[in-house]
Length: 382
Image 1 (cartoon, one colour):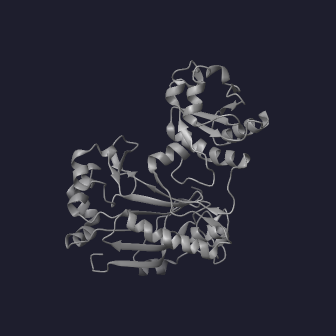
Image 2: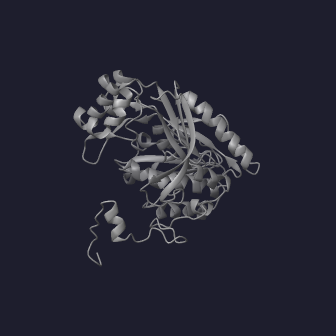
Image 3: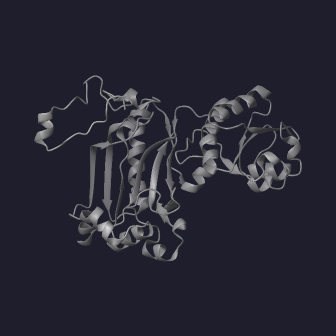
């Protein structure tokens, strides 16, 4: 952008020291890198939605594709789906009902956050169905999962029915539930624990209730990420990308509580898989200095770490933004494979080793000497 190219597109190999996961190959991946000058968030969305829709329409086997892609705020995604990578093939959302249970004398939920999931069309299912979802929640780390059935006349039955008689009408209204619904509740003092448990429970409940959509690609944008968070040491730190533009620019950094500042950051998600993160970039050195100052870095530290970028920006960079969807993950979704290893020619194992090529291999002392590298290996057996 600084050099005068107003936009560029490239398919590039990338190397990151990351662990292996079902949707991530360790060490190496390919991305479709897109950067554009003089754009705002919606401009990036317009370009990428057309690219993704056309690619998935061309190479999928006639699957349905949603367009335009819905926008979901980061905090809403966590409350409704328990994750910022929601699988929208399950149409249900969770809702916070903490305040309602505060009106009851149900001690198991006392002093805890309570999230509820209403599942339609399961009111006639046997207890085994409800206990099965509870068992699945236990597998995710829950101590249990409270549940209720909504009968024909709106009456509630189930293990905790006697504790909610005073809030039953309000509960059903809040959840948009009625006859035939099943209600599931997870409570914890730790919101992250609720999310970790209920994100997979929501999808599994949708599958078991025959609500899971097949042969569709449900895209969405996750937007409005917080710029800052409190880290484990209790200090203000960047929550995601420190080089993105804060919403509101310098004024927001000067006048708002850091934890209230949102960033022009976004993720594109399809069927519960994050294809990429992106952002409107911070092109202003002064805004960058101030953002890093809030996160505890003085001007000298920023210049020592990122001097090259700052010197370039001081020559004058246009407003710009971009995103880089992962090609390997796109292929994984198009092939309808649950594991990215199945769509890579020579996948690495969990130790980032290529067993076909025997790589990485041992480097000789002469090779290390040539590039002035000395190794310090741990003692054998440690």
